[in-house]
Image (cartoon, rainbow, N blue to C red; front, side):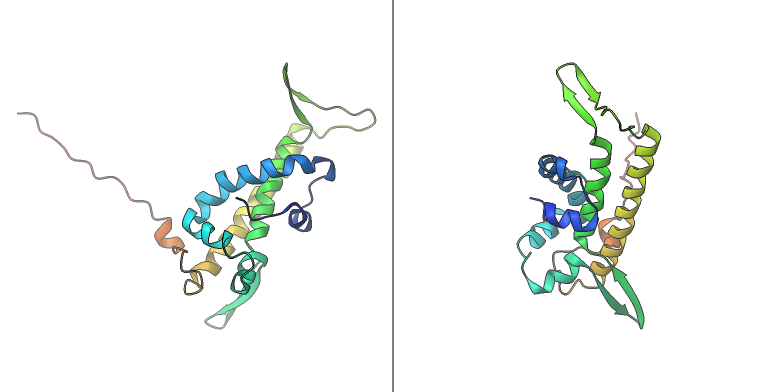
Length: 170
């Protein structure tokens, strides 16, 4: 279950109203493929269950916070999801799945953006999403007492090499 509505998406990064019917699928797929691995299942279930909880407002919509007399800002988890949605959406607009395969729509007086331009838009949206996600993680790392299901980034992202055992032949 994604936590971002179409109306919220429009506030952060607009998707064409003509493509509103595509939004739920893009939103759900982005949530499962990008957001859940990035923030963790337990934490996101907690967020889903607390969407109307005032303590989660800053997490969802963004805030400024202070650590050791330094002010930080993040724009909220919803913005992260919105920019990931937009990146996926930008790859899909103008492409139709037909019985003969994928085709690009071509409207009379309009010129379609070339693949390089679309890729640039998509990559920029991804960069914004990842940057904002890091800010949200920083906020969460420093507010673990409020968000008890959050596992600090340093612990969560720690990768360890597997142990290899050598077996000698006799």
